[in-house]
Amino acid sequence: MPLVNLPAFAPDLIADLEKLGTERVDTPVIQPAEPFLDMAGEDLRRRIFMTESATGKSLCLRPEFTIPVCLRHIETATGTPRRYAYLGEVFRQRREGANEFYQAGIEDLGEPDVAQADARAVRDALTVLANRLPGINLSIVLGDQSVFEAVVAACGLPTGWQKRLVHAFGNQAQLQKLMADLSDPAPSGVFGPEVERLAILGKLDDEAGLIAHIDETMEATGYSTNASRSPADIAKRLREKMELANTRLDSRTLGLLKEFLALELSLAEAPQALAAFAGKAGLSLGEALARFESRVAALRQAGVDPATITYRAAFGRPLDYYTGLVFEIEGNALVLAGGGRFDRLLTLLGAKERIPAVGFSLWLDRIASVKGAAA
Amino acid sequence: MTITIGLPSKGRMKEDSSAVLARAGFTVTAVGNDRSYRGRVEGRDDIEIAFLSASEISREIANGTVDFGVTGEDLVREGLAEADARVEFCARLGFGHADVVVAVPEIWLDVDTMADLGDVAADFRARHGRRLTIATKYWRLTQKFFSGNHGIQLYRIVESLGATEGAPASGSADIIVDITSTGSTLVANHLKILSDGVILKSEACLVRARKPEHEGSAVVAEIVERVRGVL
Image (cartoon, rainbow over all chains, first blue to last red; front, side, top):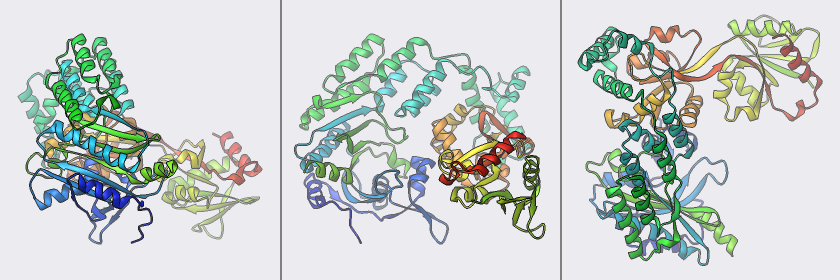
């Protein structure tokens, strides 16, 4: 194997990961493509290297380690908690930079003390980077999707809207557009002619009747045998949609959401600022705030000064398996490490029980370039 | 410099393309017999015609093997990444109209906008144990429209090279992205177009490969000008 890009510091980095009490794992470079596309969506297809096996199975070159490490954990059924470490090559189609490069990282699976596991992930990433890059100024940005979820819930927004907003969280442009749409909904094209016809006939008021009507139509059009969405699903969502048809996001709530999303300050001051925001807005953020505070305390205990971390309320990743903490560490304006909590991923990948998980990965090529520039 | 124009090799598109060029003063004739894949323009030694299959024209323009091509905008935008940087749409020719649309089962009474579809897609896995599936041959256009314009990422594409409209009824996909000119095939298959679900209003276009040697070329300028002049 031509390990041309393997940075010279890799053995030291492996030793660091080992000292942090992790178990080194490796995964095959050639992976089934399905789990990646299923988790991250079709967009990923353009960014990975895909091929087909002789039997038509979609395969890809490993684009990252989290999913393979989690799949391996599920297959080997070794029980939790486990802390896995990895270092190896990943392959992505990138506009700039090499298409193959090294990543290393830790996946911490099944630790029930969420605050402590979160703090440990941030500290470990920081430790490994600081060891490789002495004297380089590292800046950390931290976000937490669960706080946004709590704000949206406390605003008393309809469930359907909450889902949309949470789903768009982390994608600034999408979230702004969504908030604008909700405050000024489109006047037409929202309900089709068939719904208008049924409304005139008064068939929409009686849910059981509506379900029966949908069922009969499906039968008549030969669609029912293969229908994915059931008549009850459709009728229920139609009702929810009708209830929201005449509501709009009021200007006060819109103002609150914008104010929240604009928060960016030192993590040391963030718990107080969030409490003040909630108090002023009359929102009860309850447990989300308590969890946020205990994470800050856990960071202090782990030896990371929260004053060195920036909390940015709008920072998140628009993937549905990220659930709480996200963070990034930069040096010389390059993202050197990215991490976060993904409590939903293992069950999505087929784990029988819910396994809380948090982890981070390091970009070895960027670390090498920062190191090179400093030398 | 000889300029090559790629034209569709058969059917309605071939006739309509030749007719537009004839109106612009370029009478196209096949070299040898009618089935030949080479052609020329009467009285013009500086223009060659290549008759190509519709699906190849956008690729040949991208490769630069032809200088111009007449083909559907949908095929160019689907076939080429960053199409506008690589080709120029010189003229819309007024035939070969077809819309690339997002269509869902008519009976999805609660789904009439992309926002509705986004809600359904976000919940799909939790309810059905798999992602929402889209049958299409338009991978690139679908991805751009769903994630770029509407922030919808959680779906899977099922490749469909024909009879795409039948996919929802046969259970091979939940919804489709396909071309339609009158919408009648969609209606016949109990599908409806979302109110904001038109991805592209396509028609046949005169498309030019962006080649440096076209700068200042009199023939290139003349072809564009004369075609535009008869529309």
